[in-house]
Length: 391
Image: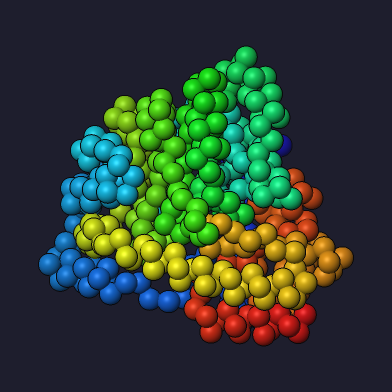
């Protein structure tokens, strides 16, 4: 009998569909509205700080869990923006992007045989992260037609059934949400906080789009809600706020006992994030409030342009309240499934998107959706719309 050549874990998931779409976009010279990276420069302040750090020969390992200056800046940011006091020495870990933050947190908190609750549609890393950590992902749907709302009665029934076996260990909460653009309200977070305490599970929050919200929406830290500080792991980073997705500087805020475990996992995963870029991040996080306001305003203008254009072209648009993606329904335009339709867009229209099925456990649940990213300059968005008019 032939020996199995790959692990059972690796056999349970595929490569990234999002990054596959980027490769296809490059091959066909398509406008890439698939992968969520900006095509415009990072702030000069950030770039100059990185250059100064390199010229100052900050080239060796930083402290494994983050340079002191960066951790102090992170703590200051949480105090200034959220009135949430964090101990920079005992409650902050810097890692290689929010991606590593998530897997390090799951490895530190979850044991094999336990379950991780994931809201769907979901960012494609979450399921594999749960599997890599030895857990079983349990998926729970957000209802698209009702503004990506939760069915609270159904959720409470699920948690009640699972609590009898004490198997749900953590909920992964992404707000603002990728791919839907949902921003969870204060009332929704309060209710989730109550469920976390009643059923005794952790909440691991991916808040990488925290400063990109629209229409009067506000981002709230669930970790700051009563009773949640000791059971919340908060993840964010520089990537989306400062348009440096390739720098890979993420950070984790958690209570000291969880931080200690997370730091061990981080240490043996990557040792540490790039030292000179950490120094640049320390300065960037002290930027004035106007920067964040302008960031959201600029993205709102891009959102409004693309959503309006897509609606005019016949897509069913779910206008986002946060992040920089828009999910659309393709039912009125084609009988093709999402994967075939996206390939058609790339090969024949020269515009790349992401098939909706990649955000669902059961591909059929996402067959009528695709996702566009609007973290691009206006001229590139206009070019994409012009190409789509040939659809």
